[in-house]
Image (tube, rainbow, N blue to C red):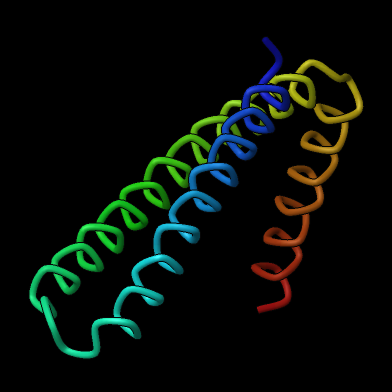
Length: 108
């Protein structure tokens, strides 16, 4: 599976889980409005549970995204290193830097 496909799949799963959490949150709000203070502790616990689950979901998605973006960046860097143009740039940029230091040291 391509990294983009896997990221897209994780993103879609995350969206589905977030939608489910939002529906649960809306149910809790409706229940809170209906009860107005009764069983407030239980509702607060449920709200805290949902917040914790959402934080965990954000962390999982962030790590998955970071992992795949890191791999994509690493693959791109390997492609760049394989290209002759990159090494020509390094060669001439390095030569220009050395010449610049030489001229600066000579001119004082």
